Structures are given as C-alpha cells and as structure tokens.
Length: 142
Image (cartoon, rainbow, N blue to C red; front, side, top):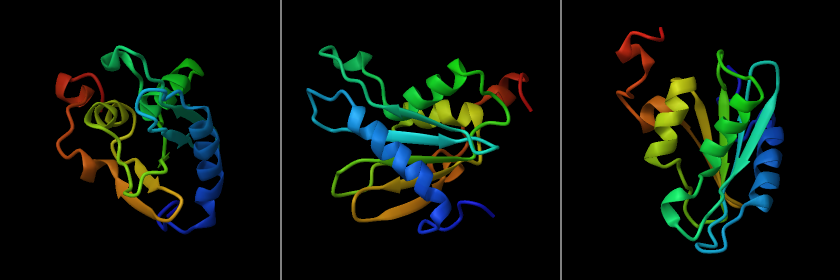
C-alpha cells in the first residue's frame, strides 16, 4: 500500500512541497513555521503554510490552509490520501484538534507523515482523532 513506510521514496515529493511551503510561512509572532502538503489521487499535491496574525485566534494553520487551497481548486472526494506536516521543532508536531476535525471531513483514513530535519513518523488520522464527528453523523455523507 502506498505511503505505508515513513522512509519510502514516494513521500519525497510531498516532503519537498511541504518544506517549500514551510519557507513561505508567515510566523512573525511565534517564529514557529509549519508547512503542509496533501497528496490526492492521481498525484496532485496541494500545499499550505501557517499564517499568523497579531490577533492570535484568527491565524491559520498549515493543514487547514492546504485543505482550503484544495477546495478552492475544486478537489473534494475522493479526498486526500496522504499529508505531510513539517516543522523544525525538536519533537514532531501533529495537527491541532481543529485541523484534525477539518481533515476528517475529507479523509477519515488519511495517512499523516510528521517530519522535522531529523526524523519521520506516520500516523493515521483515525488514530489521532478517534470517533471524529463528520457528515455521517448528520446523515449527509456516507
């Protein structure tokens, strides 16, 4: 199955795209840059980076930025199949709760590679957000 091994070369285009997005992050307050890259069926990659604001609650995380960009490009279901999240933090940085909820809207089985300059680890979104509330609970989506 694709993307199952954190060291697999198939992650390299996503990692490159995520690090490029990381370089565009706007983080003048926290200085904590995040880059994200989503892979869609057919090989399409969509990126996002965090965008901070002096009013902290209105900032945007890289993961939600990537989802927003994908939706703006007309991508829906089938949703993304893999996500890379990169930072230069000492410890790997998973998506926040709000990002997990948004990601679950589009891909309950999403594989997520967390990476920094030293290590990589794969998680499944369902493990990071068990029992996600989705459109299925509203009778809207299968």
